[in-house]
Image (cartoon, rainbow, N blue to C red; front, side):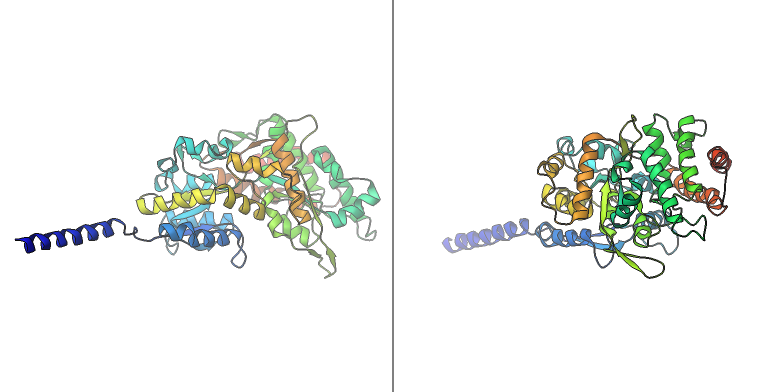
Length: 449
């Protein structure tokens, strides 16, 4: 009898230990595939941080993130839409991806996770409200803020100093649109005069990475609107005025209308100023290589986005956010763990300093500006963050509007704008007084429907 009792106790103890051991067994490992836009295949700060997550929090929690695509936002937008629509050869959607809200709208929010299922209102209150609101679609937090940017002016200061010495214009003249347009005209004339036997071959001063934004945000600064519902507001006189400024400068050759990005145009000497995302800072080299293979050292300085005198100081709010495919609870939970880690003060600030972005949490944002930027060794990055600090102190920020056809309207505008204005650049002498009105009518004929 005693032996039987002892045996039962041993069996009971073994079962208890086994059950206890089973209860502590880690969850099944979770693999998340990821597409993003930060960097390139050989040099990506996002990839480095993903590796850091995998080795730390991911290792502890059984989560591995595998980056399976790294490309620019336009390419990823197309790839995501094709995958969502089952286009042959497009493959499957990744588990998580960086995208703009316009991409999420096109994909269809029914496929995407509402982050509110994993983040409380108290947690969301830790993030800057404007950043959070940009990712809310139909009342759901579809796009989670990871890092944000705006638009600033990057200047090739090596050449600008020579221009300034000859003409008297300074970087301060680029702080207003009135000054910017004066400088653009003077720079074209200054470069044209260097080749007296070849008239009308002056250089464009400015390249705007997102020319669709120019009329949007200059019209807003002046109190107008570029949009009426989901169409261009062709009957808005202020939008027409903003377009006219752009059209005249472009027709006169003061604006570079090539495709691509301003970093390339500056590094090849085809423009002296790029207006683009703060993240452009990561893509400059140290040398300008001209078409004749001569070179110049490249010193980049940054000034805030221009504003009209006596107008509202405002600029675009930019930056992708993280989306996750809904349906697999284990993957949803893993994605939420990555978001919490990446938007934590340490990881988020490190990423933003590397890439030229702004952190997304209130506490990180305040700490970001508290001590100044003397600790940043690179002069161009220090110049960038000094300009960002001015803008975030003095400017209002607005995201681009969110409607179903915004992406298509953007693409159509960029194509038609260039087709309308490029012929003027090769026409020699033109009547600039009529360009603004004539091309606005032409733009309406092409896009007004």
